[in-house]
Length: 96
Image (cartoon, rainbow, N blue to C red; front, side):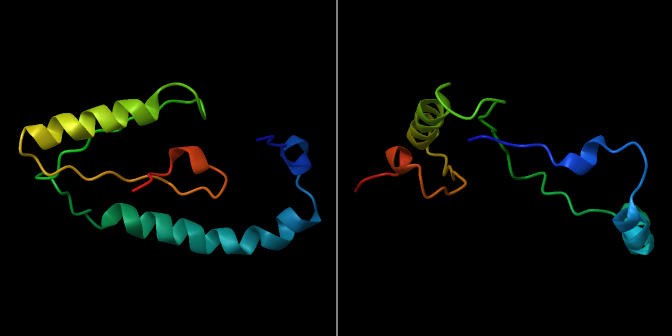
């Protein structure tokens, strides 16, 4: 996957569109202030393991996740896994 940086990230001064969209930042700032004042509900009874790193593929995340899943299943713990779906990753889809 080739990622390209947008050209506007390198601009030194704000352009016309930046000034045009500036009033919308007021709503975003108000939302940020309100969201920091409202306490968030925490689920302390749910334990989470995260398997991942900065690299996209080939570092053993899928085998590690499968190993952890099977170990937790043997310990009579009901594990749940979540994975982002990509159409082009046919190699990681389970075949039943």
